[in-house]
Image 1 (cartoon, rainbow, N blue to C red):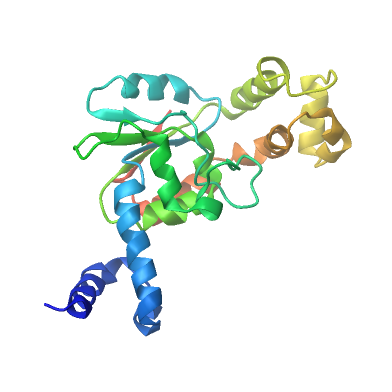
Image 2: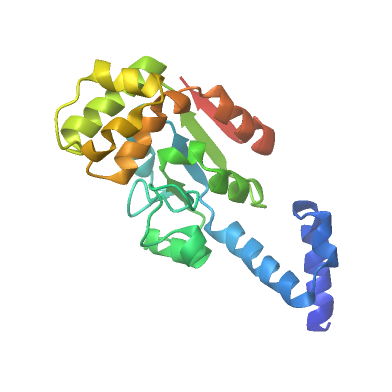
Length: 231
């Protein structure tokens, strides 16, 4: 069987995962897309704890990571599949700038066995890149979203940013920060934040707490058999 015939068979077998326009593009483009689809089937994690931040995800991740059938990521949150304009994006290794191959480096203990990969990046809940890539993966996987009472989550995130992370240059009360967030005036204290990613999070905390706006997109794309909500 010729290589061309093999490619045609692969295209046919993958057609249900591809847009109809795929059949109209050139051969080299088809080969590139097929290569990335094969990579996706190998490199997209099997278990994703995709959100939400400050909702107990580290406890769940650490419990699952101790299972002998699971390979944990070098970093609980690699931020690999973040949107290109998101400051949380890992600048040293991310999908947009380094491609899927770079994701292998986060799983040095991964061998050719049947163990499952786990990624605990809680900001994937808000990432269109993660949603689009995970929804095109052929093999089954599961995404878990832990949701916390919104007001408690926002307060916890503020305290973590201010105290644990040390990401504020001067003291701001939670009541003032909340007022700024609710009135879309966070830019007034932009210079207070050490990291752009911390400011970005604080600015969006209330919007991110409207979970239904994000969960619905994941359910529509992946279905309830793959998306699991933990309250």
